[in-house]
Image 1: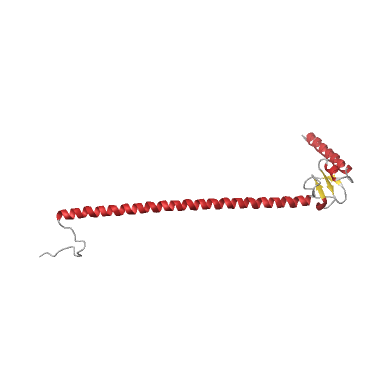
Image 2: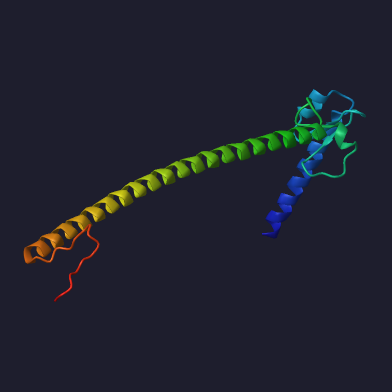
Length: 164
């Protein structure tokens, strides 16, 4: 196990020196020739080509002059561009979510108004049915009173007579 670890360490160190040397060979050249080599970066101000991996802090030039992966823009420019694009995408996602929530709320309110209208209609139907049942009960009671001769005077105001 230790032998495999040592072999792996030796191979990785050897590869890093080979890559580093091939990057250094491209110094004082052009950006395109430097970036053609894998894992190399190019300093725009002093024309140095060097081995670069993301997260390296020991750089031979300022980050505003560092070109990596592409000769179009510096790392600092890419950081700004990616941040702005990410912000715009985030604002767009928030706007879409707000529009969807607003639409859902409007749909919910319309459904609630429809339910309220249906409930009001049912309540009105129940009230009318209750009034009809009450009138029917009153007619049945009046029919019974008429049958036995104790029908109240509806408009006379005096429901009972004095007994003499």
